[in-house]
Length: 59
Image (cartoon, rainbow, N blue to C red; front, side):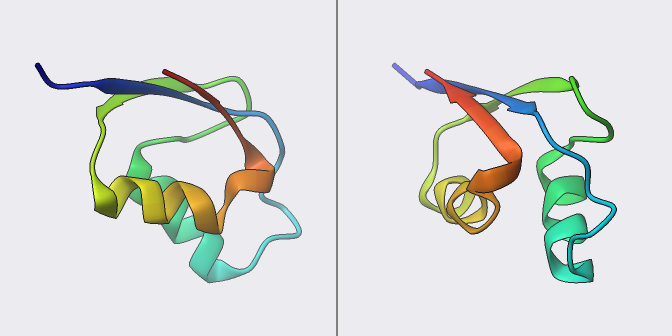
């Protein structure tokens, strides 16, 4: 059974680097309060780890 992760953006990207902004777009987040569900994978976990200060994670 595939596990899913619920990811919510909690902070603004105004003062973030371009790399972190593009990582958010890659995950599928657009604005504060936006929530997406993604399949749990090593690639996704690495992306989450790099911008964890902007996100709220639920399994």
